Amino acid sequence: MQDDGFPFPPNHIERNDHGALQRVIQVPVFFHHSYLLETQAPESAFLSKNSRGVNIFSVFQISLIHQPIDAELHMDIHKIIQIPILPAGMVNSHLVLGNRGAILVDAGLPGSEARISKKLSEHGLGFQDIKLIVITHAHVDHAGNALRLRELCRAPVVGHAGDLPFYRQEKQMTFCPTGWFGRLFKLTRAIQQPYQAFEPDILLHDNDSLHLQDYGINGEVRHTPGHTAGSVSVELSDQQALVGDLIASGILLGGIFLKHRPKQPPFEDNPIEVGRTLRQMVERGHHTFYMGHGGPLPATAVKRHASRLCCHDSA
Ligand SMILES: [Zn+2]
Image (spheres, rainbow, N blue to C red):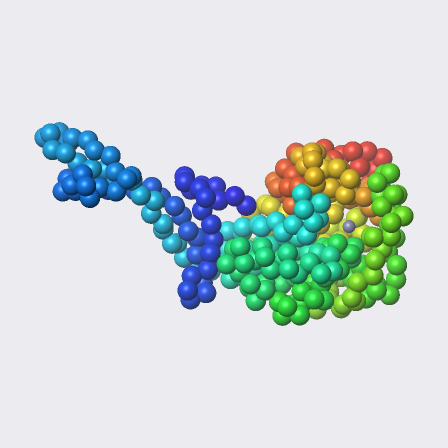
């Protein structure tokens, strides 16, 4: 989320010395001094005369306002931070920052903890600030590092029972290519690489949802099937959504170029169900969609893509 609504970006959210989250707002301030001598005036000062003809110096400074983020009043402030697991938006995880910490959406490929740690530290955060790990589905670029991240963050992992046999590594996933790139990519066997099995600490069944208030986030994890049977999304009260691989944008795996253009990810179990799920999410009012490959996309682009997928849907 951009810090819209404040006139002088960039504003950001950081942690104060006591560990509480605060929003830092930059405000330009003019100080007027009639007593400054020219030799004392800072470089940013400029000289003018007031109505009585007295010389005054105006000094321009940026003042920082540190605004505490109150738990009750600001449940709706969510900052979404994209974590590049691979460059150029090819593979993304995300952080959703709330008033009491963050949730991590997707754990990335095995061994990607250094990239996640780097992004956390850029925002003054560490693994201890992650209160929940949401795994959108069982493909290796989303779930492959879940076990390691759970150890580092000491946070529970949430996933859906529809993908449980794959989280447990009991069964091979079905990889249904959506085009030539998927077919070629499948031949490399990179997508089929095994990862450390894990058991989600919170397992959603059927159409269960998990409310995120306990983690300082106003939103929920919902079952959004189609890409895989157990795919889930994070839907926030500010109408932003993090949807894993329900939709992608860009070229090849996703990202790189044409990130504004929606596309199917390289693999998709049930395109018609994906179209139906995306259409329902747009109908629920979500305006911005963050994805594992490319993105983010506005609802208009998602709606167009969903209609294309649903064109043979008689349901
Ligand atoms: Zn996937």
